[in-house]
Image 1 (cartoon, helix red, strand yellow):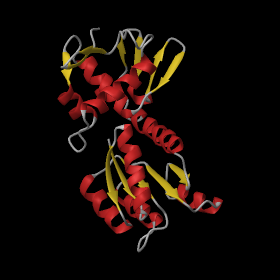
Image 2: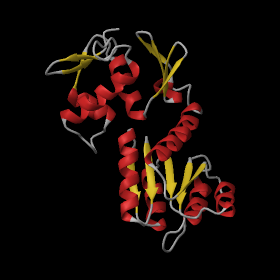
Image 3: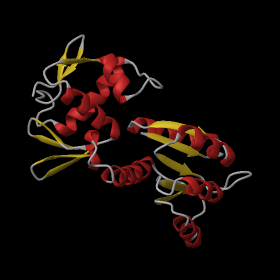
Length: 228
C-alpha cells in the first residue's frame, strides 16, 4: 500500500516516512501542497497524510483538491494546530483522522493501522484480504490482526505480507530475495540481519514457543518456510 506524506518540515517528513516504511507501506513524500497534488495525480496513493500549515497551499486546500477527484481515499491531518475548530474543519473536509504535533511513534502507528483497517475492511472480499489459517493461528489481513483462540495479536502490514507469502508457498522455502521483494518492495531492500530481526520479533508474537517455531521455520542459509 502506498502513502503520500506532505510536510514542510524535513525532519518530521523523514521521520514519518521512516515510521510508515517500517510498517510496510511504500511512502511518497512532498515538501509542500502543490507537489502533493501533483504526486497524488501521478502516483494514485492509497492514503494521504497532510500537514495543515504548509507554504503556498495549506493541507486544507490540498484535501479539497483531492476530494474533487477522489472522495474515498483516506486522509489524515498531522498538524501543530490543536484547537477544536481546526479538527472540526479537517473532519468536515472529509479527513479520516487528525494527529496533533508533537506526537509519538506509537500514536502514529496506532492511528495509521486503524485507518488501514477501515480501508481494508471495505475491500475484504478481495483475495489478498481474506482470512487464512497457519497451524493454530487465524490471520485476518483486513484487521491487521491474528487470533489464537481468545488471544488477539496485533500485526503490521509488513507482518501480513510475510505471513501471506509463506502461506501461499506452504512446504516450500521462500528465499530472502522473494521476502524482500514482497514485504519491503524494491524501493527498500534491507540486509539479511534486518529480515532476521523482523522474523524474530514476529515469532515472539505469533509462536507459542518462539524458540521452537511451528509457523515460521528457518531454512539455514536459504530463507524461511511454513510447513502447514
